Amino acid sequence: MSAYTHELHTALLAVRRASLLTQHVFHTHAKGTLSKSDHSPVTIGDFGAQALIISALRHNFPSDEIVGEEEASSLRENPSLAEQIFALVKESQLNDAEAEEQLGGPVKSVEDMLEAIDAGKSAGGDKGRIWALDPVDGTKGFLRGGQYAVCLALIVNGDVKVGVLGCPNLPVDDAAPLSADVGGEGRGVLFAAVQGEGATSRPLTKGALAPEKKIAMKAVEDITRATFCESVEAAHSSHGDQAEIAKRLGITKESVRMDSQAKYGSIARGAGDLYLRLPVRKDYEEKIWDHAAGDLIVREAGGEVTDAEGKRLDFRVGRTLKRNKGVVAAPKAVHGTVLKVVKEVLGDK
Image (cartoon, rainbow, N blue to C red; front, side):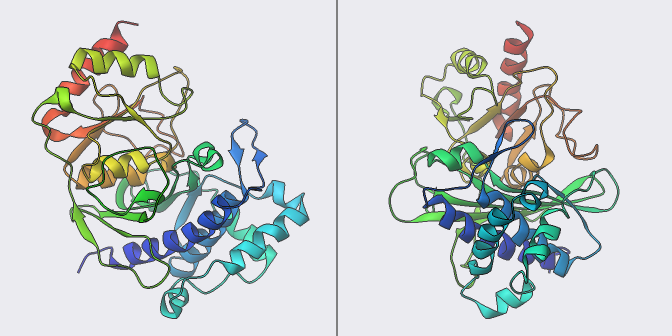
C-alpha cells in the first residue's frame, strides 16, 4: 500500500466532485465572471470548486496547509453572488454515498463555503504538508469553451508527493490524437500520480471511481516528428520563441494550443510530446498551483520537467516558482536536445 493512499483517494474524489460543478457552469452561458486585482478573470466555477475541494481537505487532513488561488472577499461584498454559488455547491454531489461521506458530505452553509474558500491562504514553503490548488486552471479557456483543468497537489517539505488533474474536456481515450477540440462524446479524464509509483488516467465519472490505467510518455525517436503543446494566451508563453525553437529542431507540425495543465496530462499519456512555457517577462513568477500536479504526473510518466535553464521546478519558496523561469517538459531521452535549443533561442534575445 502507498504511503499516500488516503491522500490520493481523497484528492481523486475531491477533484472529481469539483469537476462536476465546473462542468455544470461550463455548459451555462452566465459564468458570473469577475476581475481580480491582476485583471485575470474568476468565475463562479473557480469559487465553487475551491470551496468543495478545501472542504474535503479540511475534513480529511485538518492540520494541513492549503495554497489556493482564490479568496472570498468579493463574495462577502456580493451576497447574492455568494448565494448563487452556494446553490451550485450544494447540488454538486457524487452519485456515490460512500464517497460523499469520505469527503465530509455537503458544505452546510454560505458562511462555511466562504470560510473554506478563504482557507487557501497558506504562504507555502519548504516545511510540512501543503496542498496546492487551482480550482479552474485555464479560466480564459473555460470562458471561451476550451480546455481547462481542476488541479490539486500535495507538497511535503517542498517535494510534490501527490498530483491529480481533472480535465473534463479531454478525451477519455489515451490514444486519441492531440487536439484543442472539445466537442463530441467520451470526454472527461482524471490524471493522477504518486511520487515513485507512476502515473495513471481514468474516466471522469459521476459515480464510483472508474478503474485506472497506467500512462507513459511516448518514445520520440525522431525529434522532427514531435508534437508541441503550448499555451493559447500569448501573455502566458512566447509563441514567437516557440516557433523558432520548433524550426531549429526541424519540427514542422503545427503546435497544438490549449489552456491549462491539460497540456501536462496530454504529453504524459503520449498524445503530445513536448510542452514549453517560455518567459514573456523577466519579472513574471509562475504560481505553484499552475504546475505542481502536472510536473509530478509528467515525471512519473517517464518525462523530465525543468525550467528554461535546466533546473527542476522548485516548490519550496512560497506561492510562486520564484527560482525558475519558464517550463520545458519532454520525454527524458530528448529533453536535453530540446533544452539546448531553448537556451540558444532565449540566449539570442
